[in-house]
Image (cartoon, rainbow, N blue to C red):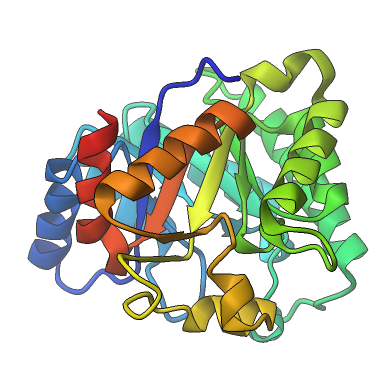
Length: 280
């Protein structure tokens, strides 16, 4: 279904010391990951400084997963993206989202607004930032990742994204089996993208990983979805089984859904590296 090779990303959550950060960055590459990612939440790592520091000790790609466009100025964002793109030798992947944590908007002095208002702010930020980057002498244009699960976001991604990341909620539609819910969202993206669909790389965010239901930590997913445990363990973004079994599942996702870019959080980094070995 896809001509995209497997790629694997991991999101590191905190910096710590300079030497500690550099050591963890090197571990990401040594474990076989293709992309080091940094989220954008207060209390976690500051994305751009961390990615620039990482560029000195790794040759892999570096991404924001994802920036909160709701609190960003296109002028300042374009300035930062341009220089981070240069300082990472063109390895930056620019991930953008609408933002979803009200307290972070409050801390920035920005109204949280409705989902529609946040999506329109994302679209405006993306359009204006791209125009400003295109006006630079060296035209720094990193690939754009958009992330989420809503239909309006999927339609925007169909028009604008190079990469789309399906959140854990992409497997949640009341009364619909989780994989069917994901398949329907992929179809929305396909319809919106038209002829450019095959050029969009599909990313799946893995929120939980474990060899059995007893060993997998689903608390983050429970809080995000409100679903009972038996439904959570069926979600596409929850992987349960041995490394070989999980690898087989991801091969099926790639064949059936076109999902070829898989991202995990730092706590799952070492365990998922065992899965990567089966997919290289």
